[in-house]
Image (cartoon, helix red, strand yellow):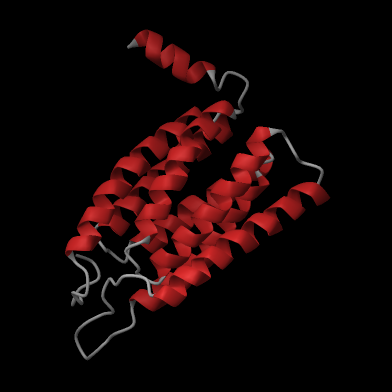
Amino acid sequence: MDLFLEWLFSEYQDTPTHFLVLEIIAIVFGLLSVLFSKKDNILVFPTGIVSTLIFVYILYQYNLLGDMMINAYYFLMSIYGWHRWTQKVDDSHYIPIKQATRRENQQSIFIFLATAVFVSIVYEVFDKWDGWVTYVDVITTGIFFVGMWLMAKKRVENWIYWIIGDLISIPLYYYKGLTFTSFQYILFTIIAVYGFIAWRKNLDKPKTNLLK
């Protein structure tokens, strides 16, 4: 156990204490957000907002511009999703979980490609290309943009994008020295699998209480 902790914190030996504290806080709120999302609970959005704002700051410091923009986008989509999830289909039921339509799947492809192109341009303009890491960051940014958009619209397919993006992010963040965040994505992957299963079971079942 001591060797594990020594190895874990060795990744942070040159990291300012406030960065470590902020990363842990962001991770805690990020995990809470994913857990609330799995449960189809409206608290996914306020907890996610706290996590994303912190990560915007951290990722900017680490020059992960793509992931920084992901979190800025998460913040905006959380506000949109918070509003959308509170819409009702009748006097007592809120909008249910649904499968993406053919048009939404086409829009997902467009969002992925447009995001990848935009992030690539940003890296080029700011001269931040860093080998394979940058290419991976561009891909995960596109994947996560689609995932968040589908989650805000309450489409079950959002979990597929989260699973793929989370698996790719595990080695990316470890390589960049953000070990705790890498472990977070391992947990995210596990939760996303269960989230997909849970949402599939609740397809087209409107809720009467968004906090359950």
